[in-house]
Image 1 (cartoon, helix red, strand yellow):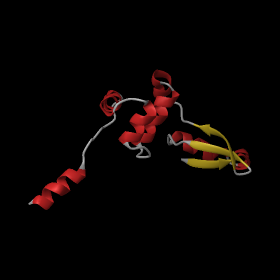
Image 2 (tube, helix red, strand yellow):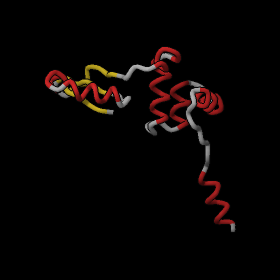
Image 3 (cartoon, one colour):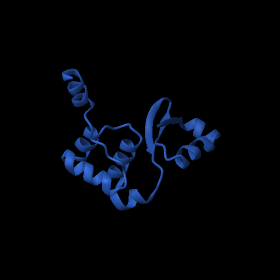
Length: 106
């Protein structure tokens, strides 16, 4: 995510364009106070809605865990994993702690 001041946006719009081309979120600020958010447009925004699209992107980039994604979507972990897999997002539900416990027992 990138923060871009309104003055910087006026003098150097290429910064904003580059963020959108890289599918990054951009927070627009005026005097260091957020006044808006910009999101790159793609087909997911149209087909799934803005909220779902933002949450999927957040998960893909590692900004959200699977639990955070599911909580934000208001779905169970199982349904959240289904949503992600239907959108072509790799989902790994792996508990490394279980392996550590097994190693300790050995």
